[in-house]
Image (cartoon, rainbow, N blue to C red; front, side, top):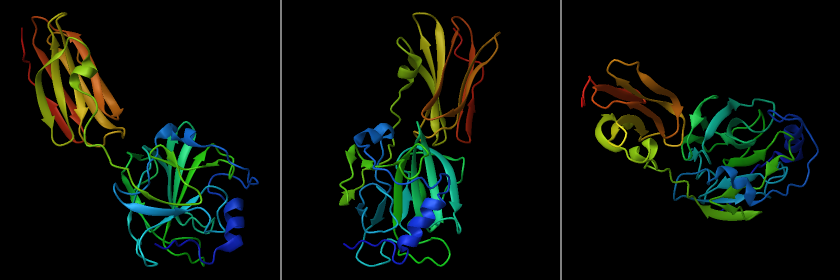
Length: 304
């Protein structure tokens, strides 16, 4: 297993990145002491589940502190074009080629909330856009060798975890699957295995005493459920997502008791919309929901 980093970037790239970081200034490097607490966002290796990658934080003179260059394979271009995925869910705040500003080339930056962000540099292809919500394990680009004009580098993924805005002292030690990376070099197998099961059930969302009395599939994107609580005479509606789990996407649930106004819960949700509850004993109800591009609307039914 070979490791490949910047071939002729050298000290000039260090100075370029420090002076022209895409968002921060050129503060002098400080020792970073953060460790496993970085797991506030539950980071995983930025590669598909089951793949083994070797990271090196010391092979490049362009590194400021805890950055990592990742490679796999036995030849210089073995991983060129391999998928890169989000280490944790969040919102893309940068997806752009940095041009002559620094050595990052095609860069994706994801904001994970609480001041945490991850950087994915030198990508050949960027698969996401600024402002887009992404889920953990979602493809965001491919391994490449893009940089600033005239700066040749061999293919690799340059990965950073940052907390705050004071560059480069905001660069943190990387943590994957709950364990701090074994600096300076370690080979890891990705546990970035996207969940295919929604952890929430309709009964959990609606609460104790509710039972499912009807449901409707929303294509492959989710299912909307109608529940009833015989103890208090209330109906409840919730839409449970099946795709884009952990990523905030358009989802809705509504309940309309005959003779009353419709109650709707609609927005960008990670796992479900609702619960929407209303007293409906002895009355007919309309109910429905939306997930992705799929919509369901019932007639007035379940009267009683």
